[in-house]
Each structure stands twice: as C-alpha cells, then as structure tokens.
Image 1 (tube, rainbow, N blue to C red):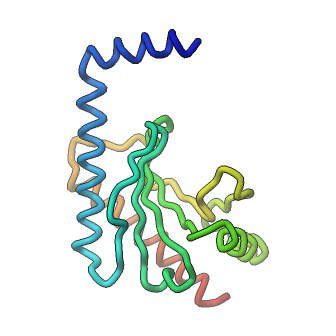
Image 2: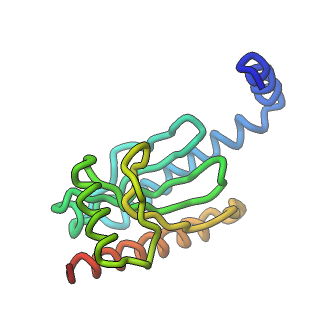
Length: 163
C-alpha cells in the first residue's frame, strides 16, 4: 500500500472516531499507571512523563534504587501492533546495555529473553507481562502489571547480587 493510500485509510479510521477514543483512553491509562507507580513506590523514581511513541510503543521508566546505581532501569511498555504489555530491563546508554547483555548471556541466563543486539533495540532483557490485555477492569490490569514488573525486577536484582 502506498503512503497516499495509507493516509486515505488513516483518514477513514479517524472519521469513524473509535480509533481516536481508543488511543486517547490508552494514553490516559498509561499516564495513570505511571502515576500509580510513582505514588506507590516513592523510594524509587519514575520517569517524569510517558513516551507516547508513533503508535508502535508507549512506555515509561521505573528506576529502582537497586538498579539505578548500575545505570539500569525498568521500562513498562505497551507494544501497539503486538497488543501486549511487556517489561524490559534497559540501560542509560549503549555501553551499559552491551555490558549487561554480555553478563546475562555469559552466565547462561534463561529466565527472560536476552536481546541479541543493541542495534535498534532498547532492552537488555524483556518479558511479556500480558498478551491481549483486558481493558474492562483497569484496576485488575494495573495490579497484574505491577505484580509482573515486581517479579521481573526481583529476579534481576537477585541475579545481579550474585554476579
């Protein structure tokens, strides 16, 4: 499909209105989720805003004290096309990313997926939290994301304390 044809389809979808409502609702939920983490975990820090993306991914960062001094952060991500929530271990820069990718790989880490390149990839580790999420109960969805994120973080903290 050409760019022109894609834009005509985009216009049609916008005219229907549903896509606007869904996108706005998702962005509002994501900001609410970010604020939830900020209030619930005041000893850690949360990014000041949500990265809304280009309808490819939306995320915010969660900086656990135990990881921050290593220049590592947790990203809570929604992948639009895959329609799922993921949690990522990310780094402050490509050098740190490379260092930890190598550490996890050389130690035979099998718990979560290890990125194989830094080219076009922001994660060191990634894990699917919720595939095809149910947005009918946002409180339950938030709790599910929180539990999965905390388990992921604890597994990483445990690994790093032993290596």
